[in-house]
Image 1 (cartoon, helix red, strand yellow):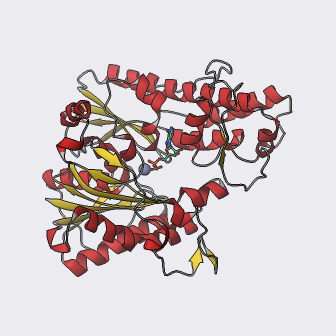
Image 2: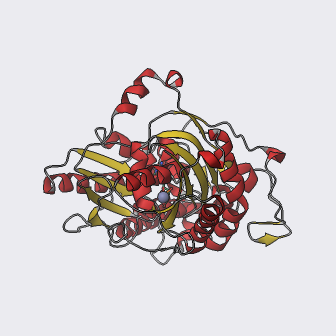
Image 3: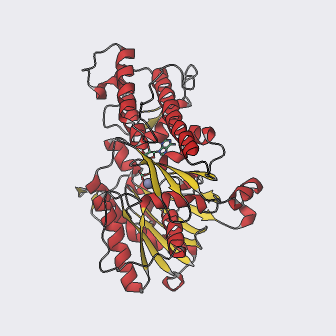
Length: 426
Ligand code: KG4
Ligand code: ZN
């Protein structure tokens, strides 16, 4: 069974063809990161407009890469919840139209379910050659990033187009990777979902069955990475920028370049050490049970930075970066990352005590790309790093297991979107 998975819940336009829930035949991801790095965060209307421009070329490329025509596709799966309203609309309206046009069954998938099912995709060698380059992909639109008349500059939206082609033939895989590819999580399992919008622990007694056993009471952990990065003068998205800074490679914004400058990867200086995770001790929130809280950690970093540079708490947070040395940025990044990872691991251990029948731990969502988290949970399942962030392959994988569990297709004339809905109510 070949499923076309479509994902547009936030700032990635993605489509993929997956066979039988595990085998990736194509995986095309167009990221809008370069646009939003300029602004320091996602602007929903701009994201929706960019999805509209990229959607059909991305789907066409996913079919072409997989060597499929519409006749080969058995079903279409699309993210319809949760996410940004305008972004979800573009993906779902496209999927609905294609399902009607090509007479295919349409399935509506919850975004967190997709992230979890990225762990069932076969780990494969990933080629990251930029296949959409220069003039080969031309968008007819006369506007760029919501600004009429402005065309995409090089290195921006079009330049940011990433095409990830995944080859699945065994002979290209590293022998070690082949072993892990055949390992699949066993039930019952606990899933730690860590993304820009969610931080949850889910209990899964079997395929397509989810119980939320812990959730954040305020910010998501990815959001916390993004906000702390902003305080430190690191670009959006904050996760990868903080991870780079902890290794002594700060991608600094605004030190010499001004607030809206594009991120610049600075040469690592000889006297710059990797971040010291113990330099700035940060508190763990005191939340009973399996719930999380990350807004206090963000404030704790803010207060620690203000104290370190000797300014009062009323000092504007966006100006702090001008007072921090690069070494201080790296040390704050490392101290924050260590605390955030410790908090996640602590709660997961508590969840395992509460659910002693747990056979596997699965980690999912954008933050699952984090190396410190991967090192801390060496026995857990993680998606291949290229599948940690938003992509269409995980949507197709989740859909496959929904079909196996007896879920029926939705009416393409009626499918709705749900920007905020829990996985358990879905
Ligand atoms: O799952 P995702 O791509 O989108 C949502 O569904 O939200 O997650 C995006 C989040 C962002 O907050 C980003 O900063 C974070 O994942 N992230 C990371 C890393 N890579 C991405 N956080 C920590 N370490 C990383 N390496
Ligand atoms: Zn996501």
